[in-house]
Image (cartoon, rainbow, N blue to C red; front, side, top):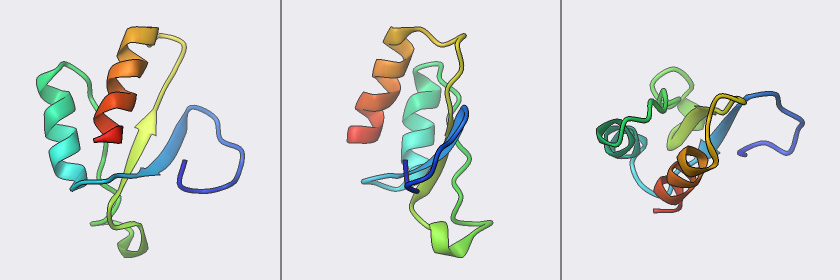
Length: 70
C-alpha cells in the first residue's frame, strides 16, 4: 500500500511502470485493475487503486501481485 494507514478492500499502490500499462496487462488476463490515480490526483501520479475482496482466489491475487512487481 502507498500509505501507512489501515485500509479495507481498496488501497493505492505505487507501480514500477506506467499504471496504464499495468491496467492493460491485467485486463488482457481477465483482471480489472485501476483506475490510474494520477489524472485525478496529481500527487498520486504513478499510483493505481486496487480492490481485493473475498471473491478473489489466491491465484488471482498472486497474478495481481506479480503484475505489480513488474
